[in-house]
Image (cartoon, rainbow, N blue to C red; front, side, top):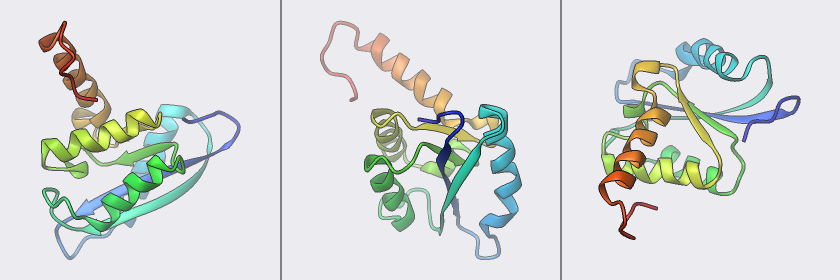
Length: 138
């Protein structure tokens, strides 16, 4: 959870599957997005960068990020778009549930494909679809 006036711990998750790209080209957009969301803050920005397929469940940095979130070492995750998190819906939902359970918001530099609103719409669908049932995603 981001708290004004403290040094907040942000994770930038960047996944690419092209050899000629690196994460540094996105850092300005990441910092701009954090400022848009939270105003001027001091950030301890950790980089989780990997060259891998978004469908691969064994991504080293992706799994390390989930562990850091569960250990309460991250306050917010920034990524480019929801598909950067995972190209597999099961992996996407698992990641977002880990974040949700640990009060970690996910923001994307691409507001059209912003992970948090997508996750919230899916959760609303699940609540509506399974209304009155105990069979919901947790």
